[in-house]
Length: 184
Ligand SMILES: C[S@@+](CC[C@H](N)C(=O)[O-])C[C@H]1O[C@@H](n2cnc3c(N)ncnc32)[C@H](O)[C@@H]1O
Image (cartoon, rainbow, N blue to C red; front, side, top):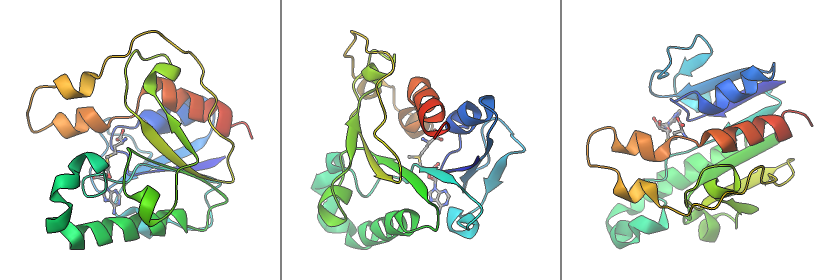
């Protein structure tokens, strides 16, 4: 299966699909963290073509997340651009698409998510509500429900790389995507 992981610098989802034999590529404006040869460092809109069977997209939530609501008034233009980017991804000519974001204005401005998942449903004892907008894909089935309910992201120390640690996809979620959506 040809899989495009849009807006991924970490390679977590790309590696999960490749481990199961798929032709998976990540794409981000940034270089890949793992120096993978299977990474496009460019605007993902330049590689949204008909060769992909499946796309998993992680667009930035900076101007969309409801947690930043108190600044919404001052960033109307950025918000409109971020929403257009989400629309461009959802409208890509790819039969199967999953787009993930936290609780965000995508729900009120585009459409409600198909599913909200938590890391604790996939083996990580943490809370972080993650919405999934799906096209041509079934809901993701929890693989390993664990007891912990810690909000680790809020305790991360400030620093230039904090956003990267906060936005990195959980391994258990990436593995579930590859196992369940890669076998359709
Ligand atoms: C919320 S982070 C997602 C990180 C991802 N979960 C991971 O594990 O690497 C959003 C990413 O989108 C990238 N990005 C923003 N605009 C982009 C574009 N037009 N094309 C490709 N990547 C883009 C950013 O550089 C950033 O790394």
